[in-house]
Length: 118
Length: 315
Image 1 (tube, rainbow over the protein chains, first blue to last red):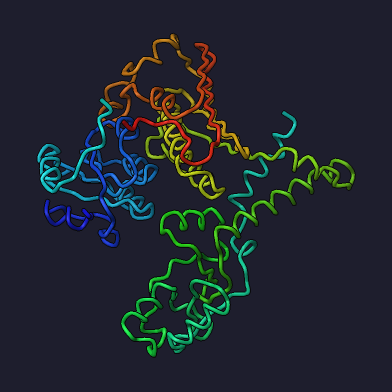
Image 2 (cartoon, each protein chain N blue to C red):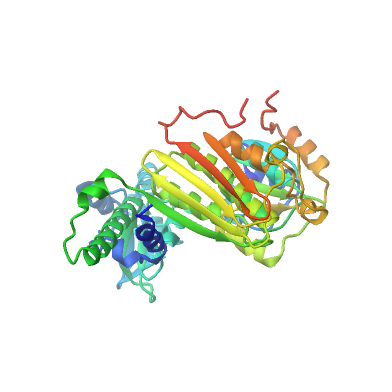
């Protein structure tokens, strides 16, 4: 089973929030910077990869029960967003790498995307 | 719509009701010096699955059946509870609003929450069932008080309560408030969860409410209201605003059509998928608008048994 800890270690992600939740299972992956698309496609347990890092990212992750959010390209949330993420149980993991690289590495770890519905 | 004035009072209750009013005070506790084998008897005799650990009145930990099983596996049953208990206890304060306890239940996945006073002394214990019961009692009381006042004393409407039970929640949504956006949807989600709605329905309703709320944030001049009416087998969500209104309802229903300005799209909003997402999640959706007057979006969900929900985009 893939956990946040394994993902964070393999991709050298910095856990901005949620050090206590690293044993959470990551069941699928999804990448998009559009919140409505994430709202539509990401499922509970999903790891969401995005360069958005504002408060609504936390709202979407919390509403959907995502396993965590990877913030790419050095995107950093403000203090308010971090506090909200901490209180809502949303794990935020940061990296300087691009979304493409992160997704490629996640796929290499065996993580599958949400079904494309084709 | 005679009942609306009552219900808005009820809505306030969810936020006003204090933990101390719904918690149970007869808590079975153990001391840190109790042995794990004694704990086993305490749990068995009282048919409970865990107990707060109290030392001189203060809450110092919580010990559960999982801790007990682990100590049995390791042949460590003579160990004191102190050694095997969980020290970081998720608890609530007695003067906190019930909604705070509801949040903690859903975030930490715990079945019971010890209740403490401001000195950290254990004063009670709370389960999700206690909240539901307390809320229903409070709603009933409030309803009766009002009706009694209206009828000059006789609470003659208990039959009405059993004929039709519904809860109306109203959330004010401010225009351009991107930071607060999503707050109403997540509050509604918690209420639905705490009332025991099936997880699939909660998720569908949360998505629809979020998109409707963001539409009010992004597109209105003065914000609007998100209203939810919860009935035992039916959920209705409405997003209502007073302008500017939509020139062509047909056009905005097209997936990908967006009028959001660039600055909003940069934040990841305005993909033109909001209404499409709502339609996908809801059983029925109706959009009515008049330019210069306002817009009303009605979204309905039928509560079916779990597993009978329509797919929400899964292939």
